[in-house]
Amino acid sequence: PPSNLLFSQNNTRQYNMNLFKVLVASAAFGACATADHHSKPNLRKVQDVQPALTESPTGEEPFFPANWTAPAVDSTAGGCDWAAYKQCDSRWANDELGTSSNTICSAGCAMSSLAMYLTTRGHEFTPHSLNEWLKGNSGYASGDLLVWSAADKLGLSYQGQEHDVSVDVLTAGLQKCHGIIANVRDGSHWVLLTSHAGGDSFNVHDPGFNQATYTTSEMGAISVYH
Image 1 (cartoon, one colour):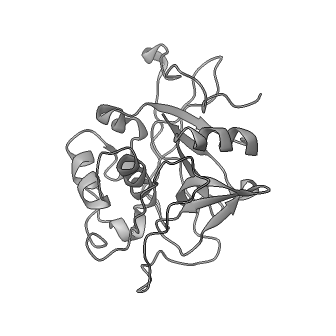
Image 2 (image 1 turned 135 degrees about the vertical axis):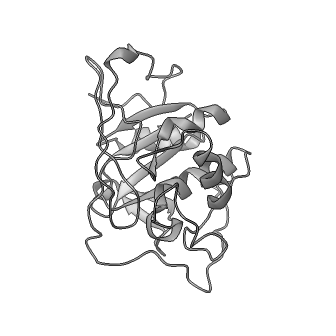
Image 3 (image 1 turned 90 degrees about the horizontal axis):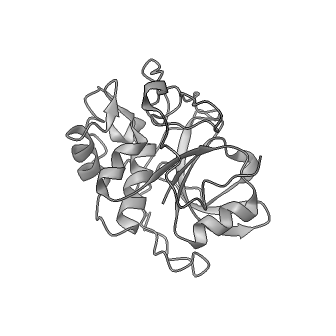
């Protein structure tokens, strides 16, 4: 069915919590830390911990290019003034992610994408400060697996995850400054969408790679915040 998480005014996670189970996977490799998903009856799958990631299909590792600067605000982005961070920025690259032996540089793409959205919403979190906050606020499972809904304590409203979302729905959500964090690179990475780039492409702030756009066909699960 067509997506409505991007438009819903109600938090779609309000259901019988006795039926809620999170299936945590083993520690992941690649660009982000991970976990498996759970489902709820009669509703689309909702995910509260990162899904398991695959190894990067290209073998690339996240990096922080020496000449990188935060992208200019895109005038088509609805005036959201999207923040931008790199997970391998030397200010936090070697910080341990959660309580694991992974670092923000090696495994912190989802967390860094969330930091970008929180800062966009006026909360002023860097990957370093968000990592520290999450450690003290039940924001990680199994050491370094991001619990998406932990940010609800900061005023966000985690809506869950969608798959195969249309260009029109994604564009409308971004125009409302909703947080749309997409799984890309065959399941090995997460990025923050910022605006429609034309056709089936979207501009992103990619915390790990020097890539400015991804197509909807390159996106897997999409985590949604209001």
